Image 1 (cartoon, protein in one colour):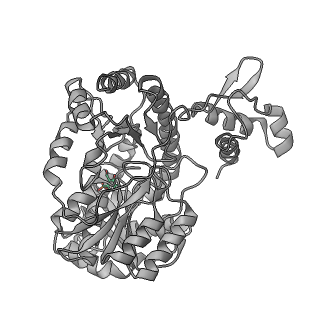
Image 2 (cartoon, protein in one colour):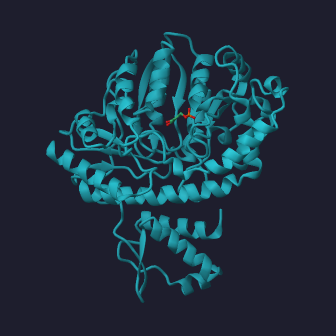
Image 3 (spheres, rainbow, N blue to C red):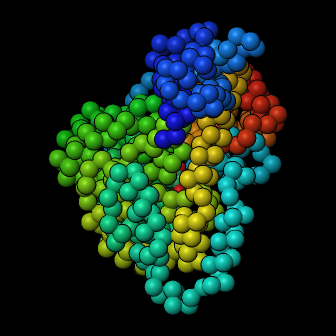
Length: 470
Ligand SMILES: Cc1ncc(COP(=O)(O)O)c(C=O)c1O
């Protein structure tokens, strides 16, 4: 972690712990230089970062002051309470109908699953891709069949290493995006009719994949900031024949929740005791706003019962459809499933991404992307606070680009979705994130698109539409 980031983080922690409160003056740049033995540039950079996140403000000739905290005016939603036990799924038609509306490019994409394409280095990626196509070795059509391009898998293993995880290269299987990875993992460890545990609310595509494979799900209560309840998961493991868990531990979709590293360790240990495989869907972990990346299941303990699924779709190359599974003991099975379904992931794309990871400046790109998203998060919170009713509940995510809002109980999110679309605005209504269409008064908003007058107006309109339902 760079010095200014750790100072910013330290100060942010003091603010979030309530040690520094709204209106308090921060130590002057000169004081911090003295107490921390660092340069004025470092302190200024840290203060600038905090300012861009809306946490502090500079007052002319007076110094820096803590701002009235964003996201503090609104309360946090409570732990979810999914109804009933296991359930068969019939959600796909309903989800497709809703998602169809999000595709229209003229709509303000607050309901989109993607961040703005302008945040990604497409020019540079394009150069690596055309180079890969020009230098394409015909023999690689065979050598890069699953598990996939050797150099790409080595680069992925190096990234695991930098997060404290030792993953053997031959356990990494390249897939066409994380979604294919999730499907393959589910197929590797379940049969139709089996029961899997998921968190509530959850990513709708996990529900759709489970439905397609004829699986039943049990939804486990989750907290919008802290993630899955381990107690509830333990109860479910004791009382139900759960064959696998499909979970998001870092910046979950839709809530943005983050399971702390300590709780991740307990979770892995719990699953080990019950001999249940974990499929960790971890596509957002590079998008952290704190000082360092959160751990993934592979960095917690060496456990070959864990399948870690990720991709470059959210942090580098949306549309390239490049993902992977670090599949532990299931690698061979996943390779066979992949060979018998989609055969291989497009080979020039694999080579291009491998070259980009080696020479393209990925970490630099990620740092900028994270900074953009952190600022946009603050902007969205401020707008929601200004325009939505004060009973609205919101949990500030520590990464990713989704924000989960619990609206007053009388608000119908599906109705809101239709009314908003009529005004050219998309939102993701809560019921698509639940097997039983719960979360009828919740919505997910995307802050992955740069702030604009159009977006500000859209949030004001949404606020009015919510108020009109009360
Ligand atoms: C939690 C989660 N997992 C997986 C995916 C799919 O990733 P990919 O585009 O790499 O298939 C998404 C995309 O929205 C997601 O939000």
